[in-house]
Length: 388
Ligand code: SF4
Image (cartoon, rainbow, N blue to C red; front, side, top):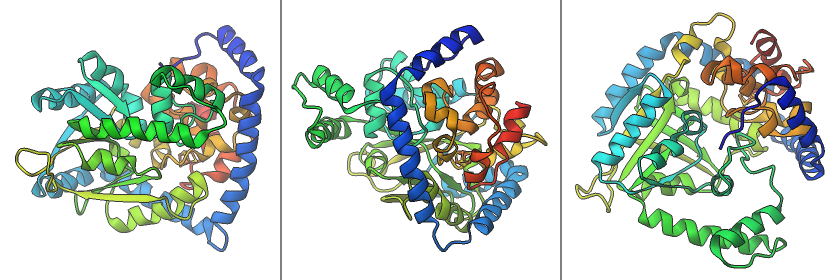
């Protein structure tokens, strides 16, 4: 479950405890150093400044047009056989998805990693409805088994050692695991998750892009699990923040030039999946997949109109503002974020999960400007944090 820093005194104690965690500090130090190198290599020879300006201007010009883009997306997606839903709040989104599951006679849900689903606490809601939910991204599955939230937006289990994972897998599978045999642990995860893919009636994903002029969803992943989640079960539900609406493929491809490079230092992620409409599906009684797309507002429309904070909606969720943050590097995401992590997490927490959950966190910002320098969307994060 997500842990929220309470009053400042309790939070200080949590920070002191985190500072004693030598493994965490060493891991995050090594990661930060490796990230710096891979980031520099990934953007070698590119005009990064122009790319950032292009992404910022494309995202900014989409914000005042969110409703127009949504209407265009809906028209195209529904013409291709999808059903488009709108949720004003996190609770409403969860209820819509639970209703789709109920009406579809669903018992087992598989999920690919989605920060939007973390934002709405979707898993907890579906489990309360009696559904079995299995995360299929390896890191997400690990933290689901530990009943905790992600400590990084892209690398959710970065805070855990192989010893902790081996212990967890031994407990869950009943099979003794050697912490040095990572290959075997991955095999065990693959075997267990494959069973879940085949048993599931419904797949839930997020989306990195919702392309208005074609009604297409775009998903950027590395493990291939999102492709299985969106392909195998007879029902697919995509939960998408309104901020993921872009006018056209060209805008999505412009963002795609920066997203994997900035997130993991890759020129392109292993998988980029484009989904338009209800495709043929062998396991569906009608022979066609049931595709539902749930757009989430949860404060985004108001944020889009905010003259100071609207730029936060440019965020493409690369996670880089955590990678370069000296505070994150010291105490990790569970102590420097609520659901969303890193510099952007401090701002989104205030807007999506309440200022009371952000109040203690923002006090740690050193205003070092590292997050601003690395953000591919040109968000002035230190300025926003100062005003949060
Ligand atoms: S604010 Fe910028 S650096 Fe941070 S996750 Fe979003 S796009 Fe990436």
